[in-house]
Image 1 (tube, helix red, strand yellow):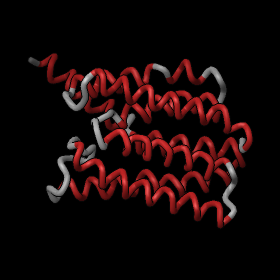
Image 2 (image 1 turned 90 degrees about the vertical axis):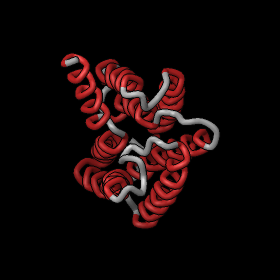
Image 3 (image 1 turned 120 degrees about the vertical axis):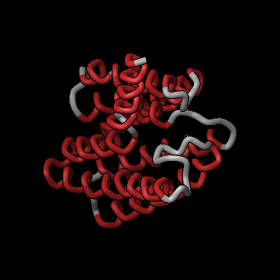
Length: 199
C-alpha cells in the first residue's frame, strides 16, 4: 500500500512539473533567447505569463469554486470551452506580438502553441486525448531546435514519464496518451522544419 501511495505521489509530481503550462513557459523563454537574446527572453516571458500562467491560474481558481473538475480538467465536455478560451487568448497574443514588433521567434513559437491548442480542441470534439503528453512530446522535439539537437535525446524520457503517469492516475488510457504523443511529435516536427526562418 505504501508503495502504491508513493507511486501515486510520484505520478502527481510528474504531471505537475511537466504540465503543459511550465513546458510552454520554458519553450517560449528558450525560443526568445535563441531568437534575440535578452529582448527575446523578455518577450518570451511576457508571452508565457499570458498564454500559460494566466490560464492555469484561472483554472485553479475555477477548480476551487467547483466550476471545473480540477485544474487539469478531466471532463472532455469541460475541456472544450477551456481550449476555446485559451486558443482565443493565444491568438490575440500572437496578433499583439506581430503588431508590437516582437522578435520573430516568439510569435512563431506562440503560433505553434496555438496550433496545438486548436488540434487538441478539434480532437476533443470526439475523443479525450492527453494534452499533457501532446505538449511534452512537442516540447521534447522543439527543445532540439531552440537549444542543441542532442537535447531531444535528453528530453525523450519526459513525454514517456508523463504518459505513464497519466495512465497510472487513470486520467487517460494508453491509446489517449499515444494519440497525444503523435499530435505533439507532428507539431514539434513542423516547428523544427520551419523555425530556422526565425531563429
